[in-house]
Image 1 (tube, helix red, strand yellow):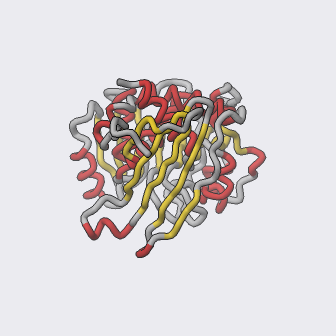
Image 2 (cartoon, helix red, strand yellow; image 1 turned 90 degrees about the vertical axis):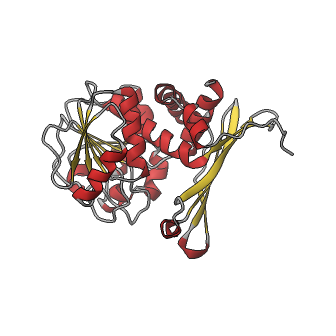
Image 3 (cartoon, one colour; image 1 turned 60 degrees about the horizontal axis):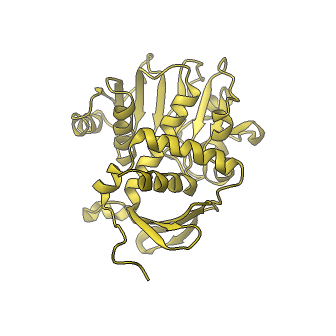
Length: 303
């Protein structure tokens, strides 16, 4: 039975409790704990819903709190003028099991995914980014733009869409952010030092030979039949991943490229400094309930 005093945060309240700098710090802590076996984060369970939807169940526990993210992904909602993702993250005391907080699930997902990308940027790049290209114009692209604006105001941000019209529309939505925005739909500008892919493409959208001065981040493809980064980019890079165990089943880019998993390194390894900065770097993000747990810690610590 839940307490009538249990805080239930809506999307805007959840976002306010997840400032990007602190969220990145909490994810860094959680990455080390997960590598040391101090966070339990089993593979997510997927339950089919009618009309092509899915219910995703993602629990995680640590010594202080436990969380359960339960979200529904219903692609047909666009035609109903509804958001595609709905759900909640419930937060519990790990010792007593008493509920402590309910967070908006889509907001937690968007914020912590962007935070993982920005933690990778900070860790795998030698200098703060000056020019970032986003490939994608959806919810995750907007969340990444907001996160970049929080940590790197004044940054040049190129937004690439399926069409130039979509890219322009996305830039209009982001116009309030302290960024230098430029729409695009073709080749990535040569000066972009970070490229972040945020689509559900089934065929690679970027397959250039990797460059030492450009970090590649693949975030959108989360199923074996999806691929944003191509085999040439992957083969010519040092490959890092937020959750290597999960990537073996979900990272379609790496799976389709036939990657040698012995050379795929974890985010925790990168944070520990095990990086060769003389070689190109590529980061693949597939998500983990451990990052939702980090977001819950951030929300509890932020007032």
